[in-house]
Image (cartoon, rainbow, N blue to C red; front, top):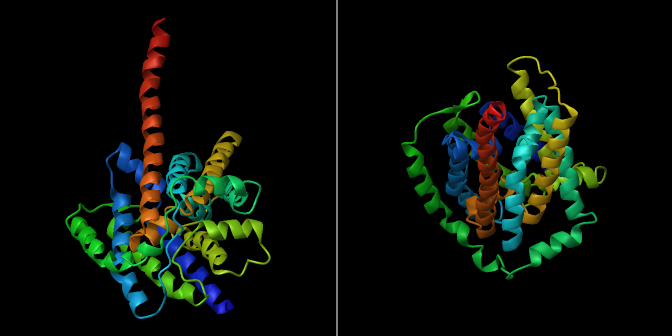
Length: 329
């Protein structure tokens, strides 16, 4: 691996962070808004980014600029980990990439969530809970990716279907950008991630968890690696984007709020480790290749987000009734 090749991770991460800050691109709020408010603005950007990669990434493989690599497939791990990850997004205040970019925007709560995520993932990847991760991932039927790794050749068909579905979708903005602009920009970053990471002898697209774990567990030996530089680039890009609109002030966070962010971050790390990926590694890298394990993981993440969102909404709707009953006693 050359240092120049590794530095392309910083370039890709910076682009991702910049776009995410301008387009408020985070699937915590994206999934939650779709569930509770029927607002699919951010989900449409997410789907468009996936569709664009479905159309173009197979061409990248066809001309030899990179090689297709599927995320690991653990059916039980994808379901259990996806549910945990999706449920934890609410308390963490973002998805895995979301908390990273919010650090660059001055969120101290997001910084606490990143620390929790790093500790949670490291505990299962290289720490005392490796055996637990292995047990969960090996549970159920063993499924190999090998017979499925040619599905990427059919991705353009799925991409055309998704583009057709989005063609007449209503316009809308999240953050400063429209969902179309954000989706196209994220999709383009996802596309260039493949050939650029191949320069570092790493044939894969974007992923958040590997770099987050390496940054905590092996900060010296792995500092100059594509994955670490990618995650460090995300807050850098967000900082540049946020600074372009004015001064950045670090947000205050109470002890109670910090503990909630930390617990949510732990859940993100544990869930992503069990599922072998998150909304980026699975959703923006595996799903565009039609990787079955990635599809299962993303559906499970959405389900986990739905459960906590509906539970919280139900709790809030009950609160006024309980207060009214207490006043009438």
